[in-house]
Length: 124
Image (cartoon, helix red, strand yellow):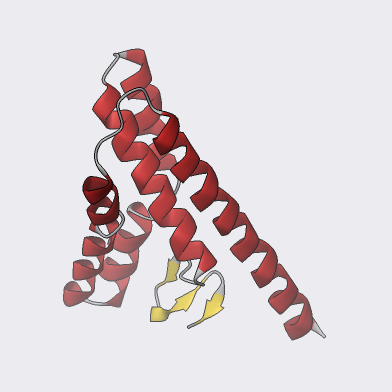
């Protein structure tokens, strides 16, 4: 029974990820001078460089991965960029949020210390 509830929660979290991906992409499109689509597509991949932390082991890997896959970082970047009128940082924040949303949609959640396959969305 608990496993069934977990899978229902998993789909809700994936739907939330899809909403984040869509909203961040729309935000990017609405920016006054968004960077090119090439930058958007390449930027979608950049946060995954944090997986290199797994070369130092599962604990360090989980920490580095999670730092770059939490919404706090891009939200703070967008706020600071807005406050100091640095538009490119808002572009980066939108792309970063889109990446996080896409990852959640695909089932890649925040990592647990047991290893890359163990996430808050369940096991990969």
